[in-house]
Image (cartoon, rainbow, N blue to C red; front, top):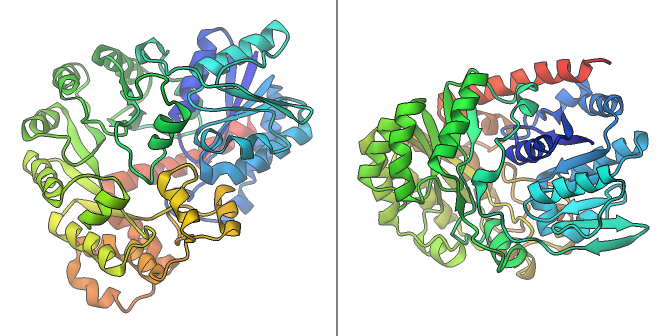
Length: 485
């Protein structure tokens, strides 16, 4: 069977795992890809006019003649997915399935779209393989767990299966799908674990644990160190990798695992690496070990500099002193770090937003990223936004349809919206050069300054890597989609 994956903007490990699962069972897969330059850092609308990538993707799909088209969909991609699904259906009589976060938290909305035949709720490796196997056998099995099926207006809604507990049993992700489109080169993205034990009110993890998968097994699962090292060795032999980004929700959760990883990684891999850290999850001794193994850079989630707001409204139950202690641990070990911050929470005052700026100025991180709060459907805070009237019913429908993002102006009705705009644009600059605050107070947070902020929100090395990724994606995507045309 031939399965065509469709994705946009960047490498996505979920698709890579799905592809490798299918290939390991003898099926054929491919990818059509939209580089979507600017969708992460800065939107550049005119690019679409000079590079008609959507039409090229459809033509490539027609050439490939798949038996199944599969999308992975985040909420802010839903509008694009609907548009592309309609385009594919206009040229191909092929079933379309959509999986990922958006159909998991809003399954009814996604399955109701006329051009979508099936959705996957939750993790999809086993479900998609069972689906494709049944198609190869001659008839779609409509009783597959995690999958919903639509036929003649009737929807079959199957329950989710228990979590796959042993991640080591999964084949290594099929990175060639995205490598040929230029999505990575110097930096390898990988994950050692799935799941997060915390229940932050703005994050999808709580929905997964308490709604989608309640009673379905342990949510946080981690691969064996040997399995991770073996994967990295294989990829080092295939690609010109110069560093690794461990994309786990929180890399420093399991100290026992890290103690084993430290020695194995240092001895067998030795590349610089980056990870994500929650304050309070890394001790001084471990920070020095990780630095010795190759940790050069970390993202650290702060979100708000107001302790009451963090604890009561975000369920980020960590003290200010814990945050400062983690920053000191990283600095003393010689590890650069970027803080991750959010402005514009419902009910947040200007004073609280400025507390986040002041905390960052005291922390003195390498860089600081400030995003706009985006009330994702399915999250506790997202539901609160609608109930408390911070967004209209019409606005909520637009938001649920994928409009807006945490990189743009607030979608909420807040008295402090002008402060939200100003903080997200100028705070990263003022963390590095606080003496410019009087000047910045007189400036408008317009598109020019929003662009300039990019270079203060991430270390130069990261900005350089991402810039070359975007440029390389456009060159290679054009070349790849033109093949055999």
